[in-house]
Length: 464
Ligand SMILES: Cc1cc2nc3c(=O)[nH]c(=O)nc-3n(C[C@H](O)[C@H](O)[C@H](O)COP(=O)(O)OP(=O)(O)OC[C@H]3O[C@@H](n4cnc5c(N)ncnc54)[C@H](O)[C@@H]3O)c2cc1C
Image (cartoon, rainbow, N blue to C red; front, side, top):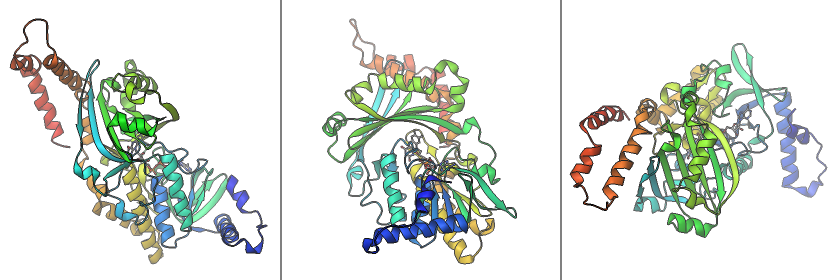
């Protein structure tokens, strides 16, 4: 029995005048009776962004929804780099963003190619990044998810934390609920939003077991730093932030990279590396040791100097792209967010959060349609996939369907960062004797063989 359900069954001992608190408790009790004795409209598994987006949308339309979350509270178990692009999801959640605990609007972009002993960096900033509706913000998931779950509860949705879902319930070949804490909980439809390691799509027959090739592991620290120090070090003002991605020797040439996002009073620093690559290349070291070496790099250490690590997390990321997506709907079940495989790494952007939010939203809309029709079979719920196809979600996954294969090219993370680093070294070096002409320096590095390799690699890049 989930811990919180025992609390919920206690009889109210509040005086009659206790107003809304008493009413809330009574409502909660009715919820528990419905949940454990009868049936709910919708059970959402997982209070991450996908699950909360689904519940927020359902509760807003008066649908009875309960979110089951294994963590102590929503956000307790959620790791993300922490950059949320709002443009694609702003209109799906009207009124949500004005009060949301967003950290800083990203107004400076940076990217570095990291060679063994040097690096090449570019920065970008533009007036559109400083507009009244900035395109992206840094967020801290432990804060954001908790806040979002409170908004769901305000709309009448129920969140049950400390509740681990262990299995699906089936009846006549369709999903009709879940098993949680040993209890069987029934619903018209289950929305699986339980993240990247979800077993639910497999149990529902919607996906084959995952392959290491389709996943990366990410390690992230939140490092507390004084607000003014952040402003000075990253050349931003209060409320403004910087985002920086790093690729190359920091993953020992393996597919992956590093990220740094500034929050209001901390920075999120992390490293992501392909699970298949790191298992194959033992000499590269493990992910934690790569991360420690990344932190110690002269490009990084001064940025976090004097800071205190207040959060450390490791998490898996789905990176298989379009070809690794789960089937999205079955009889009595929908799959959203990481659970379906909705995360996309394009090298210069890592996106999963707005796909989670949007897929949760469209899953909720499909349930609302199904409720009107009074049918929850796969054919009725297929409207979910259609909506995703018409939205940015499946458009993006189709557009970038070849990206995982192209980015798997080891030249991109090993050879080119060294090549460009060495070229820059020779261009910038002033020797004791005469300096070579620039063309001679270019020719020394960009040989015919090198140019041919680049041409071949560029053929792959045209697919992304
Ligand atoms: C290191 C790292 C960096 C990233 N950087 C970015 C970034 O900068 N921008 C971006 O957009 N995306 C980023 N991502 C991806 C992004 O974090 C995910 O795509 C997104 O969080 C997915 O949301 P979700 O709701 O599907 O899953 P999650 O946020 O993982 O939520 C799943 C929830 O389900 C719960 N749960 C799991 N199993 C059960 C169960 N059996 N019973 C009950 N509850 C369960 C979990 O506790 C969790 O709360 C990053 C990911 C990582 C790991």
